[in-house]
Structures are given as C-alpha cells and as structure tokens.
Length: 85
Image 1: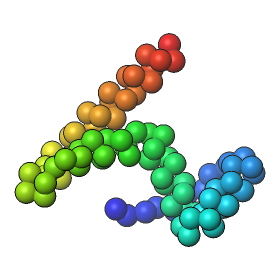
Image 2: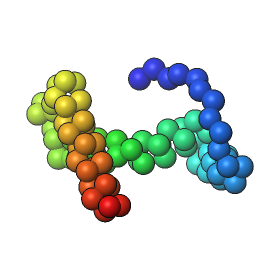
Image 3: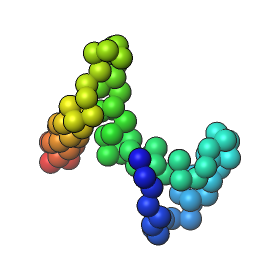
Image 4: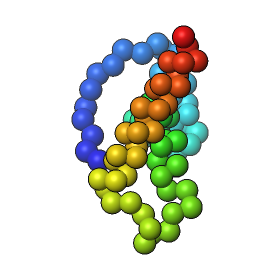
C-alpha cells in the first residue's frame, strides 16, 4: 500500500515513547504509528479475522476481503459507540 507523508501534532511524551518503542523493536517510527493507528481503527482485528484458519486456496479475493474488512470496521465502530454511550 502506498504511503503519504503528513504532519501531525502529538504530545512530546507520546512521541518519545514511540521513538523508544521503535528503537527497541528495530522498527521505524512510522511503523509504530501505523500499527497503533491500525489497531485503534480496528483494522488489525479485521485482517486477523479474515485470515484465521483460511487456506490460500480458500482465501477471499481482494474485493471480498475489502468488503469483509469494511463490515468488521463498521461493527467495531457500532460496538465502541454502544460502550461509550
């Protein structure tokens, strides 16, 4: 997937923590931010749900996978709203 450069404002303590996590894990800072944001938005769990127990020959097409991910994300958002409200 293509990446796009952006500027964000973040608390210094969070930035420092991300830099430390990157250094400890051998990853780049942007990878730490991508992983955290993906996890926060529910993408990680959606992808894990799609691929758990699926053999390569039974794997969904890109369109099917995108549809499943969108459905999972929508369900996660509904659940978060329910818990918050």
